[in-house]
Length: 173
Image 1 (cartoon, one colour):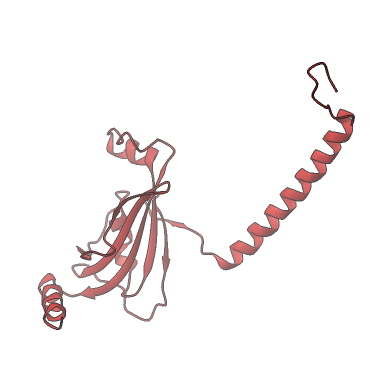
Image 2: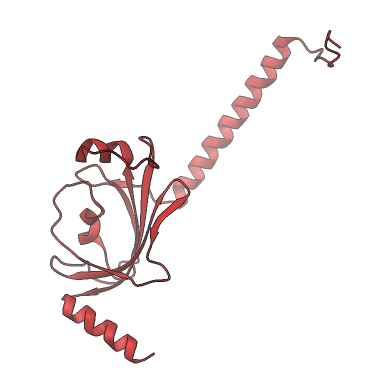
């Protein structure tokens, strides 16, 4: 016990450091093994020309959406563990597929999507601030990542066709 009455460790510091080094080596080895296993099962993010990170999960059974077509999607936008917006449980969103120029926007990946695909886009807050020269909302910090998840429900040749499809579905309910 020391002068405060607290029992102190009787092991010399060299032994403690030796154990810490061994534990650190085991922890590092474990992380490397876990990383190796997860890289076999998880898909890596790709980058668009503008530097936007994305990954698409697809069975590739349907054709890729063409310029001018409309994709019907549900999406969720998150920062850290907070949901900023979600269309789940509400109306899906219709977005026209354009020949996207590299503008650091989720629309860049739309020409790569197919009916049934899921996609995740990661926007880095500091890159958004630099590219658009603006202030970030106070709840978004410079090191944050904004994550947008998409699920492509359908692809339509025209907006009129998507509206007809929506009307058909509503008349059956």
